[in-house]
Figure 1: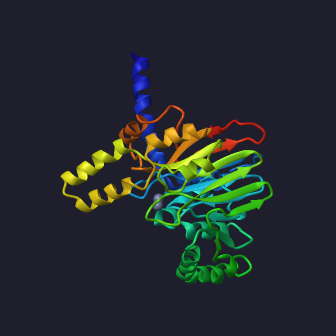
Figure 2: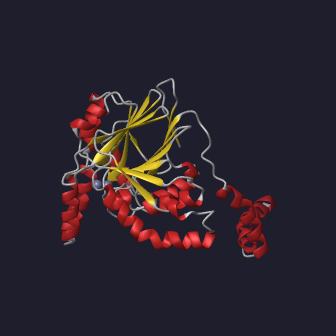
Figure 3: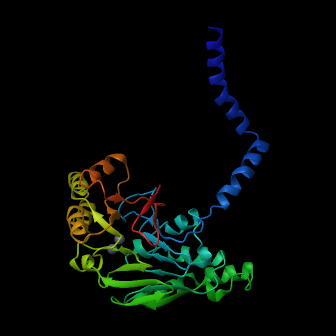
Length: 344
Ligand SMILES: [Zn+2]
Ligand SMILES: [Zn+2]
């Protein structure tokens, strides 16, 4: 009995003592000095592989605190490109310790706000961390309008930072974005990396493009926003990794019905409109199998699976092999074989 009493008292007193210690400023300072280096020194590390980092998986409707909006990063020993820059994605890149000082550029699939709104954050963070050349943003027709507008909107911010930190440390010309017109069919080839733009179907948004990335025998296709399009699957034929937007009818129908029942007519209309310009997940899996895609990965999921129940409903439609991406996932594609390693 005595030992049981001691154990109970011990179990109760540990959280009490912890709580009391946590109130002492010296203890807070000591703990902070222990955890700060870990937080500040996150390192993405080096690898010879083609790596694909998921920096955003949410679609724009609703509140998605655990997911940033559309963003995929491609990293090789020689290159670092980001595809789309949805809200919250710059923080994902920072949090993952990605080498922002050597960010080579950003490719945009189209100009919906959930694909471009964190461009200023990416420009700022990479500038702060020492990017040595202007940040180039590639995209189809319309790119120059986007870049001119953002540079105008952020000019004062950039000039304040140059004035504050010094022109040597943060030269003003590196704060601005540089637009690069990259039409469907355009190809960028650099040191073993090839990026090809292709048309997708996201009507009435036009142009809307996807990208195929090839690196030393490995390949990745990023759809951007699209229905299941024959053109995409011609491009994705036999590819190692296909990262595609997806819509679950089973998950969105109850939301539309609920909005109707509550008289939320505007919400119901928006959700009905959305159904016809994203990829139905059942057709998507069938098309991927037919195109001999190595691994299908879903991102930009409509509706975003924000809780375990929605996740279950999404999952009931999926083959065991299909992966629903989460923010911070990492896919490693070693050069020289056909394996794909997924973390976590
Ligand atoms: Zn979108
Ligand atoms: Zn879109």
